[in-house]
Image 1 (tube, rainbow, N blue to C red):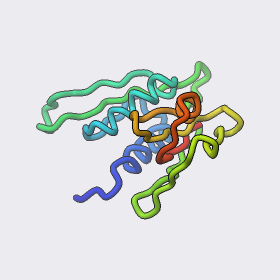
Image 2 (cartoon, one colour; image 1 turned 180 degrees about the vertical axis):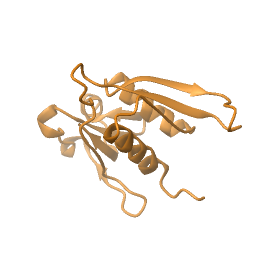
Image 3 (cartoon, one colour; image 1 turned 90 degrees about the vertical axis):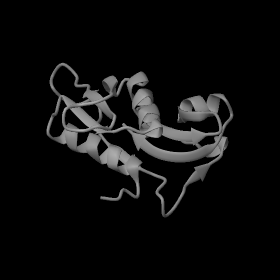
Length: 135
């Protein structure tokens, strides 16, 4: 099975896990996916992120993410939207990075200094590829 867009696959996995209220979800390991997962954990959208070296079923590394829910059972992640896609890359300068839902959500931007949120990119005056928005 070939994957043309592993980031979209990760976001779809998160979206589906939220829809069925799963506690944990696993995805194949890559450095970009791990950086995105760690950023989402830092921003409070995921409870925990672990790299599992070997499981009994697979010889490849997996990233295990623990989903985060508020006390009444609603998920912290309300929506995810992919912005830049393999067929159409979307780049933005510092001045054109907009807040997501008035600051409720974040945009994840790939900059020359690594992955960061739109707030961090504006603070450092960096533009880059807007990967996705999450709220």
